[in-house]
Image (spheres, rainbow, N blue to C red):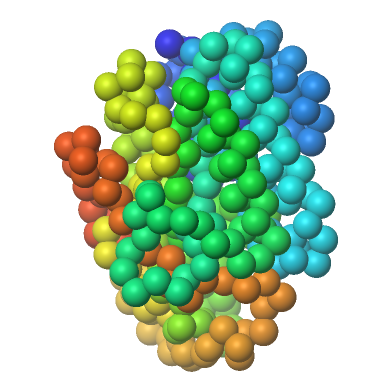
Length: 287
């Protein structure tokens, strides 16, 4: 089963390449094809004829998208639509990754896969539109994740949140992190393992098409997450708790974006471990 990983150089793409069979997995990076060139993207899928396309490519520069959404729309909405068309032509199954940011954060309990999205900002709207376009393909899965981190992190953000916090602490810089946004921080490696296990069931039809939430268990504020990372790394530095208003970021973020992994549970798939346990292993050197 040939699997094409689009966005293979990103943090989640790199983790997927660790766990998918190397002999039948084809990485596709920005150097191979420009996602904004939809004709070239469709031609590459037609040339490779994969059984599965896994799209982990994204423009996740949230604040930049608020200033100018064109790049986010091209990568997060138009390109997934082109991939869906290419998969329809090739008879391939499409796994597309999305985000907790498609929700408005006004809920008081974890969002399930059946909850109606309500994106707040330009980035979130581009991701929601990508979901809509992929959803028109019968053989698809949309995997929503949250608070991703991994070795090397996201290039668009200058590395992962964890590594940026540790680097700033070691450099003696002041640490100010929001306390009024709650998420489920998730190690990309745990997502990759869960998706690799689920993939054969999706392709065989043993697992239904549609939306899946895949996050580490539990939740915390970004301030709690930063404090835990410092404690686990043995760094004794204070972290100032601030509000989103204090931060003054251009793009709105959901105040509460916990995702309930209900469909994984319904399939009998093992739940992902707690975010704290995953973070501890990550910081112990399992890079």
